[in-house]
Amino acid sequence: MRIGVLALGAANTRSIVAGLERAGAEPLLLDRPARLHDVTALVIPGVAHAGFVIDAIDRGGWRSELRSAIASGLPTLGICAGFHVLFASSDEAPQALGLEIFTGTVRRLTSAKVPHMGWNRVHALAPTFESGWAYFAHSFAPPPNLWDTAAVTEAPPPFTAVSAKRNVWGVQFHPERSGCYGARFLKRFLQTARETVYAR
Amino acid sequence: MLAKRIVACLDVKDGRVVKGIRFGHLRDAGDPAECARRYCDAGIDEIVVLDVSATLEGRAASHETVATIAREIDVPLTAGGGVRTEDDAIALLEAGADKVAVNSAAVHDPSILSRLAARYGAQCVVLSVDVRRTNAGYDVATRSGTHATGCDALEWVRQATDLGAGEILLTSIDRDGTRAGYDLEAVKRFGRALRVPLIASGGARDAASFGDALLAGADAALGASVFHDGDVRVAEVKRDCIARGLEVRL
Image (cartoon, rainbow over all chains, first blue to last red; front, top):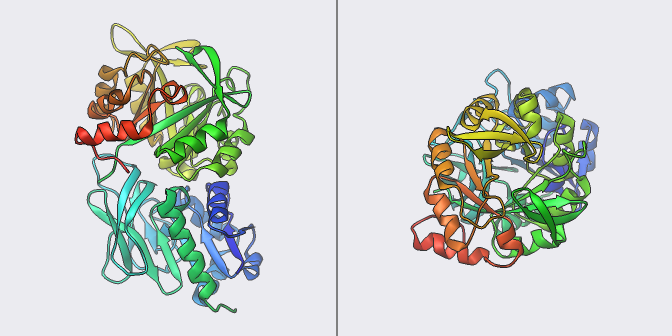
């Protein structure tokens, strides 16, 4: 398995690379769409403004390549803003069209203090995932839904902490900075990606 | 529910952790990566690394130090010191930081906050504010506390959060390194006024002082010398918080 990390010019790049390395992977940084052919798993990192990421996707000619790779079954993990751009739209950048993998709109949090910053509990709703403490840093999140929400967290109110739809996982927290819990999450993604037969 | 955070701060100068009193009298307190690893193992919730001489020496914070720490730890890392331009911030994030702290540069040109927020989101932009108590309230000092601006700190943080700062790291210069306890009056005042998270810094004395700051309205309490000198252990702080009904991560 070869795992790629999308490098679009805004992300905690080294942080996620270090996290994946601790989980046993040797990630490649992908700086142009053609390089998607070199990998069999993909991480879209967070720590970015959703509008900036979508803009970078379009400017760099990534959109159709990303959508077709994901549609062909490329195991993909979107983190925080990298998760948000998998939706059709986000309150953070209402004019920008996302990749439309997940349905719905990412909403601005309505908690007393925003950003929702720090450690909070993830409650798993699907057997693939586990519950535990994870690190969050975000002002926007997808509301829970009945079809692909796999874990929730109470800001309050509750929001989607993990979504899973076929080959695509999205997480609101930062597994690369969530201690042992985050490391186990990344290992599970890597394991699932290894078990996936992916050929474009 | 969101847990309150216990944060360890590594003030770094020439690649070593240093700590002083009221921003002066610096003494050596160890290797940054080693300290970070130790605090991480002990259950710290977040690490802040500040290059304390970068602004005064007119350069950006050391990327190598940030990169080494980032590899060692699996909790979030905030980096700052000498961040003057968007490129300085980008370099720190590229080196492995998860959030960037801006201080003097934002006072000089507040638009750096909105530019960083437009690229990385407000949650990535920490405004670090060093304050001195006055008769009227709190004044902002810049350049590692060497320059008094005469600006009201509360006004400044309000403006900064409107521009895109997603978190406030409030350091009381009067209390820094003194072990006199946090400036709880400042914590109360800023905590009430802010709609973004507040990290209280300056004056941590013992395990109970962290809980005092959190109960006064801080979302996170930061310690430096109390941890470096081994006077307070993270587990002790968290036990005290739990005993006082505060939610913390175990």
